[in-house]
Length: 155
Length: 436
Image 1 (tube, each protein chain N blue to C red):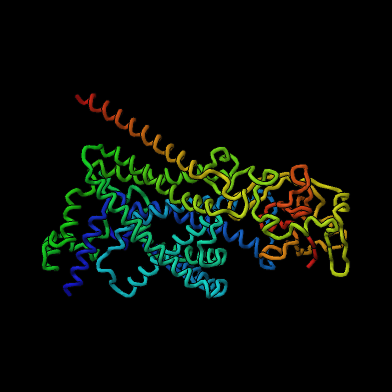
Image 2: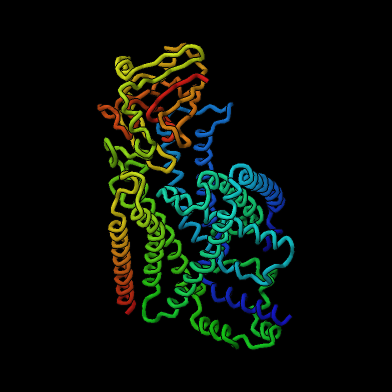
């Protein structure tokens, strides 16, 4: 079945036109605000950030994830569900680290007053990492216990 | 021509190697839905804050509930933070599309790919600079945060709408789970026959077009090595586990981020606020501060014993010394300081009502008020207040915070405090109030 055969294909075509028109208006408004509100001296900075974001994400971060998944795929002898739990935990820990790392750096550089970035973020990040590790370990233990019981019941 | 085929072979091999159970149209639709909601929530709450700070002449705003602004910006920052794992996951799910073959099929296809590049770049930048702004890490921006964040928000939401319009048939096709997967958990494909990359899936065809065996050359051998351990595919149960694991990772990441940061905006989570840039109860008089008296360069003028507050309505001008303000009838207001950066905290404020001072100079009911601070520099030294806030019974010229005179960093000798207003408009170190 293709999209053209959907019973409400006519409605979809109409909605596409409306949503696309709204999108074009908003996009043009955004470009307009760039031209009126943002200083021309800032344009190179904005463009380099836009290009830099794509290069950093697609070229570096996504490729690194690709390499990791290929390596993990070749791992033998570890139950698949356990690998999935470890992968989830690592992904969550990496994202939290990505969020908190600039916070730690900015705190080290110094803030405008002591009520900005007042916590011990490095220590707290370690606590969160430990929490994620404990939850992952418990989940893995439960998975392995269930598997063992299932294997015993099958005998 | 030969080079073109070799490039297409490389792209095809990449796409093939990137295939995993969680990278399909259904997961893209599920994540896209959540991300779309988060983007629209951020856009709406951001526009609300922008309108309050820069109101058009015809605008009026609700002054109740008093936590309205606090909640809107808490949601803005929290939803923005959740966008990060959602966006990473969405880009992960559609990453093989980056290697589609041929890279450009037509002018329309080129426009579509360029618009997606803009959408992805703008979304990544928007979320990143928003996050860095909550850390006040301005040193990293070679541009004005406020103006770029505002303009980019329209670019992102506009691109989102265009993206939805382009993909609407696929979105509709995979909207419901039962339409997307068969009983074994296999994706019900619709695209394959028209997919230009499809012929490359047949091993002989790849060899016929490129003139070399698929596993020849450095990349061919590398991809052949990768292919020896392919990702599981349904009905293999591991594929379902892989897909669920993927969504679990996104959920855990989003949950952890919210749980350990949202306490700066939502009191219930204050106890586990481990990672937010602000902490309730930390600051002078146990309340966080953005701009200190030193940073605003008002330490001398604010401590001047001859300080007076000037209230003006055209020809009628009155000056109030601190002792005269203190002798006026006082009122209490339990109101939050709520920052556009997401943090907020309630406090007990005390002082004369703004409307009583305005009445003292015979200001009309519908008067807009210009509020001038002792602060000479910075964007918020002079602000304007619309009549619904100026006339509100909770809007005070506060002299006290939690039963004590204001700390110098909280605006001594007197500051504005009004319900449902951005913190930057709660002008500190008052010098003058004028009817416009």
